[in-house]
Length: 227
Image (tube, rainbow, N blue to C red; front, side, top):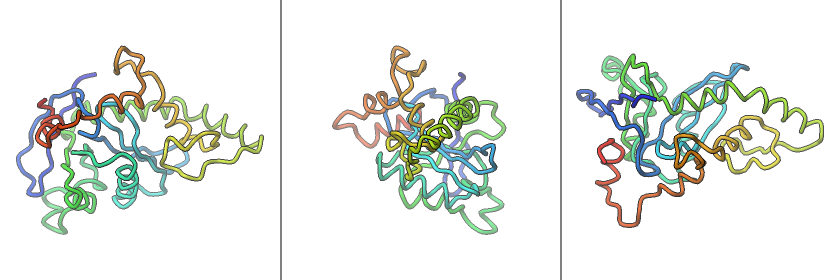
């Protein structure tokens, strides 16, 4: 996969900057997020840790809004801590253009990141390699969701109760909700891009925690792809 081309989103809409780092060194240096429409018309949103590919949070909604993105973000931060930066598309749920800022101010999502002191990074517009790691995970949903739905239907017939906590991939033991179970499967699947091609995102997230004493400047450099 080619390195993603990213730009930083500053409140004043500063000059765009190109980013070439393929993978961050530390967990929580950078998270990816974006919406995917499901076959039933609902919208799935996930937050993925760049260094480990771990899905740290997700949700399923009737609408793809900034409010829903923030709800999932807050849930993920509660479980995994705060990332240094978040990468999104230019879609209006996440970003307001210069014209939109002049008319009605920053987007709700951008304001939340400022409040949380999280850097907002943007995929370069019209890039062919937009948010590639997250897009690869969404391809897994497209390829495997039907299998998980069939298995979930079988579990329902057997009387197994679905886990009601959508959003936590580690609370899915015996659950019949197909997307919850698919995320757990993905987080514990050996990944070819991780260590020795046998490490899972769950294992990589733990291994790639910043060493004790890592400075904020080092974390920022890693987020920027400069480490």
